[in-house]
Length: 599
Image (cartoon, rainbow, N blue to C red):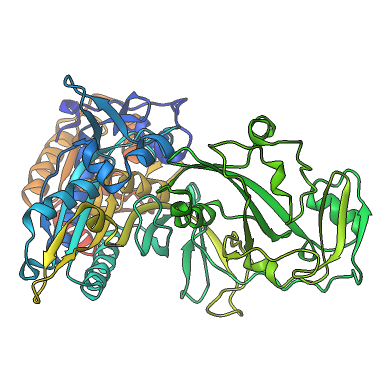
């Protein structure tokens, strides 16, 4: 492709809308253009990158025996209501674009396709002889993000590969799950990005287990906790650890103390001259279930630790049936205005004890009459601890479970792991932290969707059994930007060779010089015929502008037909290292062919 004929415009300044480097570079280098908030057009250079990633994904997926298909973007609400996720996606998470057609039927633009594929399986799979079956697609998805940001990282329209497998049993599912782990690892290696597979929370997709694939980058929205021995890595939402041992309590007897202005743990420890590991704090949450019932949740946790709200929400979803509900629509720490809506009297905020009386809750059909009391495992073994006295400006010290306070019935792990904690698998290993961009996620769904949607198969004994399912997602457009976030310098992008829009760019310093243009035209034809995808910068621009543009767009190799053509040579520059060498014109094809083959 000749640059003089390409739809390609570069910008000299960073666009005001862009926050992270990769977003700035994609806009400046003419790869994408913003159409509206969270929606971008993929221009010719970007589309070539996406095609290359898609080709790698397709090759690796097909190698596992998966079959490609294409599912509808427009989905009826009835399918989502069958699975119980319509309210979750349109109200709780609120990420589905929902609409009504001219007959007033509710529809949604697909953020994901579990319901659609399960309905297809329900209609087409009859016997165990058809299993296992694995279908995948590459498709545009839609998610109504509250705050679209970072370009293609968190957009409202994006390209995703999603796959779904169906099995007769969990052993078969685990085999495909492991195959996907290897296939995804191959995809990211071939795309030339540094990544890490980590344990993850299944979120609204659900299922018994999942793994995320993270491209490591400082601008990543996700925090990854890992050990140096390589045996453990998890998203912070899922991570588990051994907390520091609690320091023995200095309090020997139980007593109530006046502790004014100690509504924070830091202030309390200063006044009581104790460590945070010797104190118990209560965190109050307000959970709204999908049937409108509000439950007040009182979490007791060791004062040096924080509540992991993802883990807490998962525990509350497990308890949904106790409140005749299916899922949690909202979870928050209630502010003073929200407290006034349900509190029968002012709460002793900052001084709450584990036994806060249920009579603080006003009587209402929409509000559960009792606090749901949960205790984190870190707090169960505390002895002679300090905690609130249910009275403003007062705490108690020397308290114990089973004496002054009854231990809550529900002991849970809802503590947030943090860097420096000891690893569960080896206490000698300490958790370290890194930032990551999630580019892939694989799930073991089990029968979460098939059971409620009636997708069954007939086993060898003639019994109808729910299909066991797996789900495997990969962000194609997100991966493209993640590669740039991980690999760039002050001058622009540095594309990995395998997914670069072109392998080489020929820069002609002076297009009016017939000798320079003749060599450039010869190389342009020869390289493309040899399968080396090459751009020709034949624009009538200053040499300095062309060199800057070549660095900005990040093509792996730049060939300059400058003064050295008099000696039958051209200058070749490696974009990643800036390494420069002079090559004979006749040697350029073999040099680039070998360099590309290595990648």
